[in-house]
Length: 357
Ligand SMILES: Cc1ncc(COP(=O)(O)O)c(C=O)c1O
Image 1: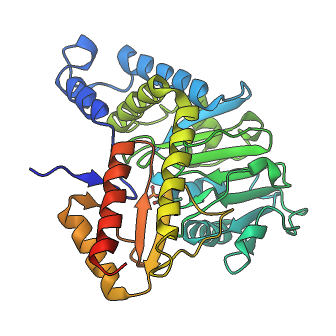
Image 2: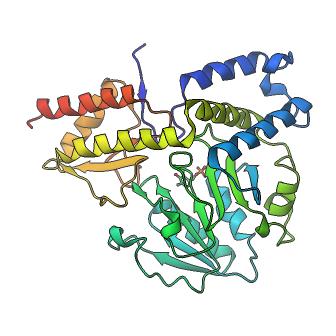
């Protein structure tokens, strides 16, 4: 079998060490004589696993002691319903800063559930996102998507945003740079890009927002946190993989390591792609261009199809842009190695040599 270079936007590549460790856990979870696939979520062994996962997350993200950690199902999409039904739904005004497709979906869902003010800046000069005096004084919570996976737009400097209670969808860049918690009320991310496989979302928030609503069980933020993510049967295998990923992240050097890698790999590819700008459209300005998802289009549509086809023939997969946008997307998540980027980069150069550069 040819080697595969998986640059998919998610579910995404896992480090091979995680796949082999998970095989051990499937065969015999920590010498219990049971597979992780059949272990009870109320067992001592699973409780130990959740506790050490929580410790790992505190370590990786430097979570303050007055913040909770919660693991939920339903993906990032469920969060649109979950968040909208919490955070003092009856009294507080929600705001949505929309910089791309996922933020727009959130804004649409929030609006169906509660009072929501939408600040749609998709047509604006992207440089000005964090500098702009948006009208957000009246908003109690401001939602944003730190990395728009489809559109290749990223905001990382949250403390430059002049609002004290941010709610952030970090699904496609969690764990790839460090940030301060000062003005963050709640962050969340589906695990399947930087931190594992589908089935579990990581949620971390300020404890002051617990218990504000009398919601039914799976919408009840306070109860879910009180039960330490075990209010009902959790996605045990996805949680197990998340635990293995957090072990691996710590062993690699934590967020600092992944941040450096992400800067190194993305700037190298952006620079290379810029050198072909006679052939390519790179639509995102320097300030907002994503380190996690590099998007571009070819001026010539036929050349783009050829590029994607030949990449596939070389074992480079996952480069097709989202079906709504077309074009090319290179996803550089935490598991992507420098060797993979070398291989991709050589392929790109060779493609332009062969096609008239
Ligand atoms: C930034 C972002 N938010 C939300 C979603 C939706 O995630 P899910 O499929 O886990 O609901 C995605 C999926 O790719 C995403 O990239």
